Image (tube, rainbow over all chains, first blue to last red; front, top):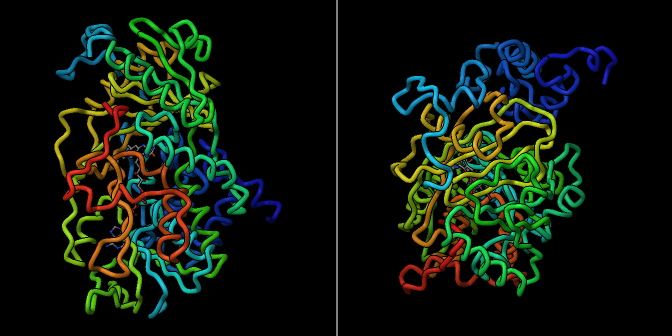
Length: 108
Length: 382
Ligand SMILES: Cc1cc2nc3c(=O)[nH]c(=O)nc-3n(C[C@H](O)[C@H](O)[C@H](O)COP(=O)(O)OP(=O)(O)OC[C@H]3O[C@@H](n4cnc5c(N)ncnc54)[C@H](O)[C@@H]3O)c2cc1C
């Protein structure tokens, strides 16, 4: 692995370097999903907003294809990370009821 | 792509990958695996990847124990250069109803008889294992340190890489569209990229097992059902074992990476192929887990998704041959626990195909059991 590859962080959430991404591509990954599954690039809190274009660019260059032909992975909800404590105060109707303890743990 | 092979494996999830690797390992020369998408793109890449011996039926305990024996040496056997993240930090199975608690105690008796060292815990003892736990309302728990979990992507990829090193061929983005037979023998597997002449076709198509079986005129008693799951941001160490409760319908683990992966069943989930997600899931999950582990209140959910369970009438897989279709094998219908079975299933199915002595008896998991009315019973899925 070249020195600079090892120093360049492509996915800042998960600390994945350019070298790690290039290794996955050399070993056969041809889609963003595969690179993500192998290296974790794009799995962090920002869900690849910063790195996915860079990763797609690397795959495209390696395969000699335009970036638009590289298979994208899906954005998954929630759009921004949400605290579990905040999710649990939403009522079933979708409103904030402010009460976390409507059902007993044993009540199911 | 090869145009002829000794065997074609349909499906690049953990099951197909394990079968393909084991066929090469046991001496087959030309094995081809076809996957319509990328590796682990079906149920495998969406799953919780938990592995446990704590079952209720003898059959399930035996087969899962044999699978864990393989998991323990797999990283080394497959010479994989990434970490498969197989960790054995136990499962804590928590009872919240009296019935569940009585069942757990009976299960442990069967487990002990078969050499599984699970222990029965009072709520206080459970709290010693998981200090972050709020044990209010808990009857008790059982704990087995040999249970654990792994990384489903890397486990599958480890099998595929070892398969390729042995000379096997993996064809991704290659969909099997038909299987041909002649006088009751498999002769050809047809794909959207060309045909492969072969005497052996293995159906490891996960949620699409029924459409693949239909290619040889078989009707499988399977249905698919969505199960939702989420992952949080990585946080400092919270607890070791997988937490699981059937009566609450939940499981939750902290991965080696520090993130928490958790899911909850929904008794009202309709059958089908929907893999969407809902905020109601986030809410139900957060409600229960924040109560069980209050420290989770401040932990942020990063991503939610869903995958499919492929379910049989008795929640046990359908494995092996089908009379009248020589060369057709299947490993399908894992009913929500196929990840943990993949190592042993790959081994036995390949032994079957190669006519070797089977390392474990799976004759009661054949398709014929549904006609015979000889359904398996597992008390430990509520
Ligand atoms: C949310 C969730 C949590 C789970 N948790 C656990 C757990 O903790 N422990 C556990 O043991 N199990 C768990 N499971 C179950 C587990 O995921 C499955 O039982 C297991 O992954 C099945 O693997 P498989 O390889 O048989 O199927 P899959 O992974 O679905 O693989 C089948 C593959 O076949 C391919 N395919 C289908 N049709 C064709 C065709 N015609 N041509 C070519 N390719 C085709 C598909 O694209 C797919 O990749 C969970 C499942 C879900 C959804």
